[in-house]
Image (tube, rainbow, N blue to C red; front, side, top):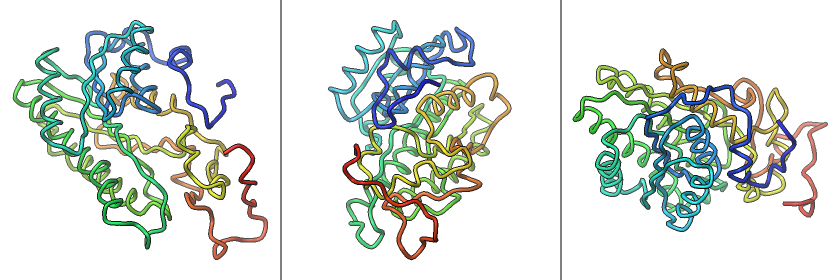
Length: 297
């Protein structure tokens, strides 16, 4: 993959030009809903599914960003439909799902990508900050899954869910709210994969490592040495996550169910991630020093 500034977002045209292992037309005639589809992993995933023939649906809280999304997909000749909604509101989620079925009469794949976090010492997390992250990353994901499953069952259709989550099998000091929410979502997805299997619904999760994105600018410079602390010694790319979603949702993943798939450069087996920087208490001789705060962040 060509060199890319890790703190700059890829344009839609750049995303559309990236190589893929999947064949053209793989999702022809299918409808794919990507929550939080207007940027980052959501945009990359939308464009890849669209390149493979799918019609896209996206939701998000910003009507302006969704308008940009529609214009971008139109330039790429990818059909799409958007609807402003927050996944934290079950009534808005239900209205979104009703709109999808009213417009297309079906939904084939749900990619639960909407989420968010911020780094903060656990002792300083406010109730508002805790609830905002847990309600989005866990409760909102649940609302989306339940709403889709109810309609698949009512219409006698099979379904496919891919949840975007995080690797929480290793400690993540500095994002306690995220660890709680993502661990809950991962466990919930595995349980529902069993409960909803009789309905023809497959559920899998992509556990994302550190992915190059503008969002990394929000973390302190002291966090940077751990961004590539994995066996591959590099960050991931949004396209890595998009391809994992397509694999799990497509024919290649038809016998994969209830899996939490780490796409993290191997962080799940070795590595450290310190969103607030590594405390001196844990430092050992030879540890990389924190970068100069003036070097580009």
